[in-house]
Amino acid sequence: MLDRLRSLAVFARVVDLGSFRAAARDLSLSPSVVSHHVRALEQALAVPLLYRSTRRLALTPDGEQVLAAAREMVDAATRGLDAASGRSPSGVLRLTAPAFLADTRLTHHLAAFAAEYPRVKLTVSFTDQPRDLLRDGLDLALRVGTLDDSTHKTRKLADLHRVLAGSPRYLERQKRPLTPEDLTTWDYVQLSTRPPEVALSAKGHKPVAFTFTPRIAVDSAAAMRALVLEGVGIATLPEVTVRADLARGRLVEPLPGWKPRTLGVHAVWPKNAPRAGLTARFVAFMADRVAELFARP
Image (cartoon, rainbow, N blue to C red; front, side):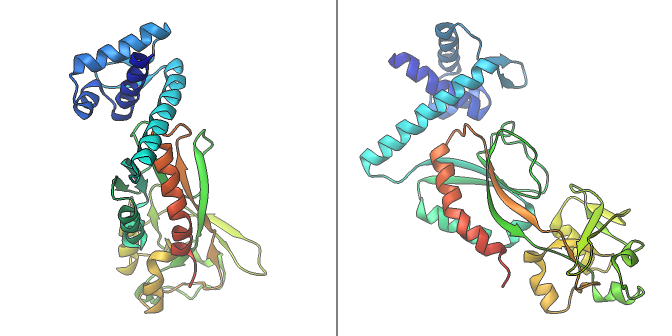
């Protein structure tokens, strides 16, 4: 039984790190010993757990079930050892978040989490490109917008308010708009990971939605804001990133009463997370802080 438990732990590490060689380095074992543990586990269970190729490993359906049990075992053992020793939780959390959040107080909250849990190492990818949690070996994502149906666990943390804005210089060159339809011929800067459309609503009016042909499309919300400040066109921007620009008049709303649709900010993590305890602690720690980050003053 002890050999079986050891093999389960090695198998989970192989999956988490994506290769036998990487797991061997992490566990201070030889690749042949790591391979032996996985092979012995497959023989004991009489089922294949991994599809092997020269480029990557993939789980079989049986492998997915065994991995869930292996991760629960490792996580329970880690929690028990930490509790017995009186030590704070330890491990590595691999996270991803939209790139625009790197310029907000989210980094302050990450630093606070690191101070609260000094034995936890954080690896954070700030990117506006979609990441696959399982394929990329990530423990958790902060995502904005409508979530695709999946088996992942989710928790809504906040609402992201957005504004449609442009620079005063650009607006001076346009005829003053009276309705959203007047904006359909204006130049737009698009975030290429989102569809080229605008949906606006105002109190006492029916919502208005229309598509546009972007003047410039970029894959970064920060670049989108910079281009709008340069007077290239207008764009739908996260309010949290442009509050100072609006307050100082560097950006202006062409139709102040009309607002883009509010989007949800969600924490998303795999149902069978490799570090379920750490992921749960991180989500609990961040929930109120992220809500405050996006709250309107």
